[in-house]
Image (cartoon, rainbow, N blue to C red):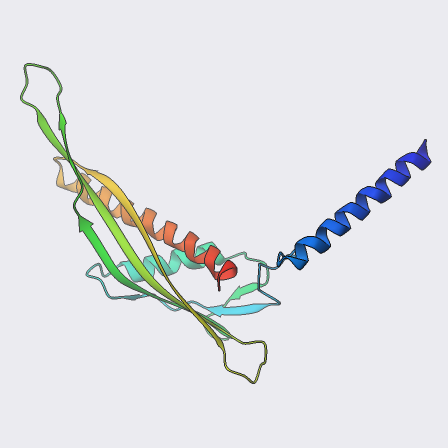
Length: 187
């Protein structure tokens, strides 16, 4: 009976080994480092350049991206001694548009209008890292990312501003997630 269990364990280990070989030949990495990250990489993430009218978004996006990338195996974020750089530029922020909905509380009351606004942000990202040949030119990859969020506009101005800030914070988190995923999969 123990010989049968031992034989089936060996077969199972063999199948897992073959599966690992097949996956690595397809480009998947079974090790602790992210896809296409062949070894330790020290990354500088300077504050995002902000070309929009919203002056506070550069630091917000930078903090969100650093938070997303922190703890990634094989990646060290160090602004002073980095061999790779992740540059970001917020190109466009659009707040407006949306839709109007009629809210009716009772049939005998005058209908009330409620509006929503859309927030749309576009970011240009450039990732510069060492090439396979240390003496050769660096690898430079560039991509654009965008995210949007809709929020309701109420009667109280303070609530509207708070909802806009929350929408922008959500967008910064969404952009950080997209940049973090693409950094290792597409770059």
